[in-house]
Length: 392
Image 1 (tube, rainbow, N blue to C red):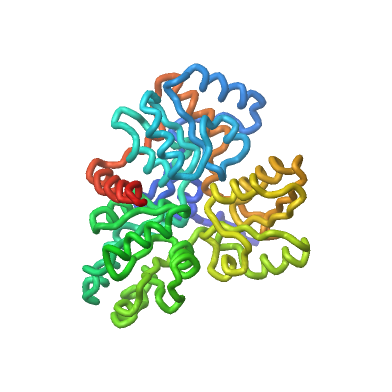
Image 2 (image 1 turned 120 degrees about the vertical axis):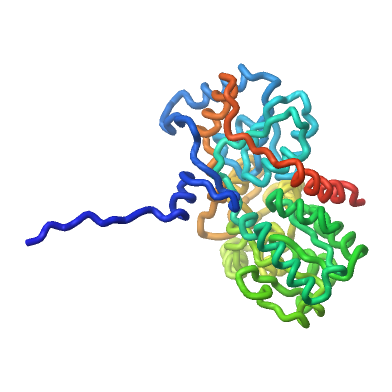
C-alpha cells in the first residue's frame, strides 16, 4: 500500500486576486490590507467605528453608496449613487480624508473631483467593479484602431458610463467625448450625436442600448456590439460603418441577472405589482417593466408611491431590502425582482471590520489604502466629466 502524496496545488493568480491577496494593475480589484483587520465577531466594532470617527471629527467625510451593507451605511455622512457621492466629496474641501464606502472606480472619481490636499481612502482595495474591469485601456485603444481602419473614427464620439475606470474616462476626454450617469444618459447621447454621427458607448452595453432604443427612438438594428475578445471586435468594417451605436460588450453582473422570466413570474405571483428596474438590465427586461430609472429614480418613485402599492425592484439587493424596511410602515409591499439572492459581491467587500480598520488607522495618523489618480489621467478624465457637467 502506497502512501498518498500531498497534491502540489498552487492557487492561481485569479484565485488570489478574488481573495484580495494579490494586485493586478489592469484590474479594479486590489490587494489585501497591510494591517490586521479586527475580527467580524468583535462585539465592539460599532463602538470602535464611532469612536474613531468622532476622534477624526471634521477631518473625515464618509461616503456610503446605496448598495452598501447596513452595518456600513450607518456611518455614512451622505449616501447616494457614485457620481452624487463624488460631487458631495468635492463640496467638502475642509475634509482631509474622504473615506469612500463603494468600489474602486467611485473612489477614483472622488479623487479626480476633490482637491489635491484631500486624500481618498477605500477601506478594502479588493472592492472593484466587474463592469469596469470589462473595458481596459489597452482594449479600448485597440478598438479605436479598428474604428480608424474602418475609416470612421472622425465621426465617432465616445460616451463612457460613470461606472468605468479613470483610464477609460481619460480616453473619453482625449477623444472629445463625455461621461454619463444612468440619470443623464439620454442628454449625453443627444450631445454626442450633435458632435458626430456615431457613438462608442463604454462599458455597459445594456444602458447604451436601452437609452438609444427606449429613450431616443433608435432601432436595435442601429446598434452593434463590439467584443474586445474577438478580432476586430467580431464586427466587419461594413457593420461598423452602418451602425449608429457601437456598444462595448460589458454589463453589470447584478443587473444582468434579471430576466424576462423574472418579470413574468413576479406578475403571476403578485397581482397588480409594479415592476421597476434599473436601465443596466437587459433590453427585454426593461421593455417588459412598468418603470425604468436610476437608483435615485427608484428611491424617489417609491417615496411617491401610494400606500398599499406593490413593487418588484430590479436592482441590488441591499438597497431593495433597505427600501422594503423603510416603506413597510406605509403599507408598501416591496420585493426583489428575482427569486435568486444577488448582492454586488465586490461592493460587499466593504464591511464593518474594513471600515473600522481604515478609520482607526487614520485616527492614529496612518494613511492607508489611498486611491490616487496620476495627473495626466486626472486631467483628461476631468475634461470628460466637465463636459458632462456642462450638459443642459
